[in-house]
Image (cartoon, rainbow, N blue to C red):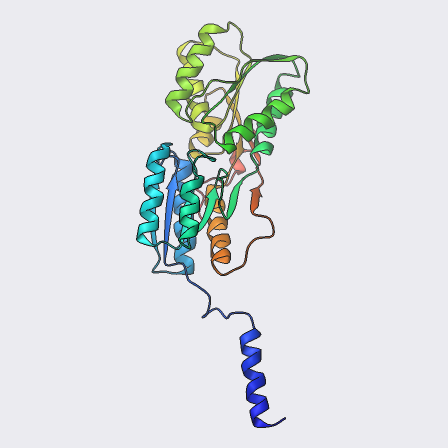
Length: 312
């Protein structure tokens, strides 16, 4: 081969070869907008995202904001991220459908949008817990403890996809047991301890016999237990979803909380950043919906549970 042909072939090979690490786009800035930074789940999620981003680029700028489940506030936060020119937005949508115009504005600006914990219309990808499975696990535990007989409350929450999926998973399991009567399933306890306590107080006043309560997250479970204590109601099986530090303490202590289907917000956030970086470099995931498995944490196995606050 002549020298000229050799050089031409080498150039062609270089052009056709995959981009090297040096040619890969870096994440220089990430905007994160979450349901509520008053919830330790979202705090851990933000921390996990920042840790992964700094591992990829020590000089990355990470801005995490609390939308407080306010759609208008979240619109403003996304617009601010667009104005500041972030490379990626991690989005925990306050309203999975109504958020779409903001998502599309971000994507039009060349920003990768990855939904976390709940789906968001128009997002490039979504990383979340398998919430249907989580609801199935938590309510399967109720069915087992009650031996298929009793009165159950499903304590609902903000109508985002994660909550809807958990409730659907719970209902699917309870529906297999004709002896289990669902007394209520439509009360929104706002995803908070205070909301869980308020809704449970109403249920305890309304219903003389409650055998079990499934709450859509751990803060509501803690509030539910507090309400039961205040009204001196006992022998209620309380289960939830999250596997948060507070629920670890509750499972080890003198409460009526019996089980929680775990999530891993740290791992969820890290996966979201990895996927976002891939999309930024033209590598879309084979499936834009990534579901992370849940495990049931109970009083029997909580001692061996590696929770959110475990060393990483």
